[in-house]
Image 1 (cartoon, rainbow, N blue to C red):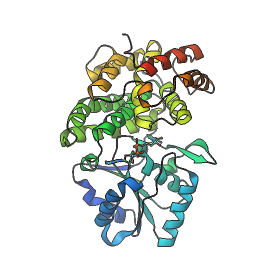
Image 2: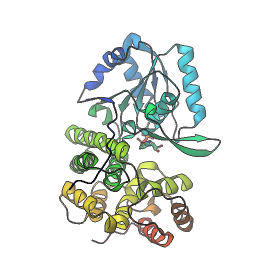
Image 3: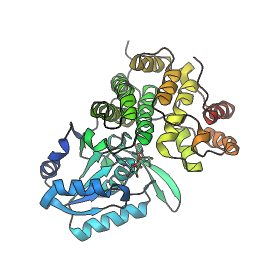
Image 4: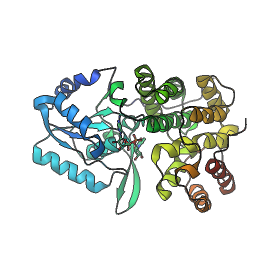
Length: 354
Ligand code: NAD
C-alpha cells in the first residue's frame, strides 16, 4: 500500500542539451522581456559576456557582483543597477552564488529571472535560499524565487575544474539522498532522486578524470537538475543541517563540506531510513549505501575529511551542540553524543561500516 503523500511540482520551463544556450534570446522574448541584466560572480565575467553576446540587442548590461552567502545589500544594488539600465529581465550565469542573487531579486520583483547553471548545485530548482543581513544568515522559502526558465547546457560546465566539479556533484547527490528520507519524501520524489544519483554516479568519475568529457558533463548536469528537483520537493534533514552549521560557523567551502559530511550523515540515519538506503544502493549498484558514497568521493578525488578543508578539531564540540539545537526534521532522533561521534568520523575521514 502506498502511504498518503503530497507532491508539489514547481513550474519551471527547462531546456536541456549541448549548445542550447543559443536559445537564450528567444527565451527572453518568450517571457515578453527585451532588456536583460546579466548577473554573475566577478570570476565568471567572461561567461556573462558570452551570455550578453547571445542576447545581442536585448542585453542591457552585466552586473558581475554576486558573492557567497547573498548579502541583502547586494540584492538591493543589483535591483538599482537594473532600474538605472531600464532592465525588465535578469539572466544568472553561474552556480549557486549567481543564482542566489537572482533568487533575491525575484523575491521582490515582478521581473522574470532565467538561469544558465554552470555548476551542479541544483539551487535553480529549489525555492529555498539563505540571505545575509547585518552578519546574520536567514533562510527564506518562497516560490517567487524560482527562475522562470532554466537552460542546462553541459558545455557551460566545461570550465568548472575537476577539483570543484567532484564536490559540486556530491552536493547534488546529497540533495537527492536527503529527499529520499526527508519530511516530504514521496514516491515521485524518490524516483527523481534515485535517477539523479544514478546519473551523477555514472557521470562524475569521467568528468573528474578528464574535465572535457562532454558525455560525463551531460550526465552530471542532468543528474544535478533531478537532484535539485528532489531538494525542492522533498526537503532537507540532518545532512543539510550539519553542513549549514559546520560551513557557516567555521567558514568552510560549501561543496567540499557537503561531500565530506554526506556518508556520515547517511550512516547515522541508515537504521531509520532503510528504504532510502536501498534506493541509493540500487542507483550506485552497491550493497552499503554510505560506504558506496564514501568510495565515490575517493574515486573522484574530492576531499574526504573535515581536517583537510580547515575545520578546527576543537570546534567539533560546538558544532555538535549547535546541530542538536533546533534540528531540522530527521528520520532518526538527533542526540548530541551521536552527532559528536559522526563529526569525529567526518573530521578524520573514516569509511562508514556496513
Ligand atoms: P559557486 O556558484 O559559489 O561557484 C564557485 C566558484 O566557481 C565561483 O567563483 C564561480 O564563479 C566559479 N564557477 C562556477 N561555475 C564555473 C564554471 N563552469 N567554470 C569556471 N568557474 C565556475 O558554487 P556553488 O557550489 O554552485 O554554489 C554555492 C552557493 O550556492 C552556496 O552559497 C550555497 O549555499 C548555495 N546553494 C544554494 C542552494 C539552494 O537550494 N538554495 C543549493 C545549493 C547551493
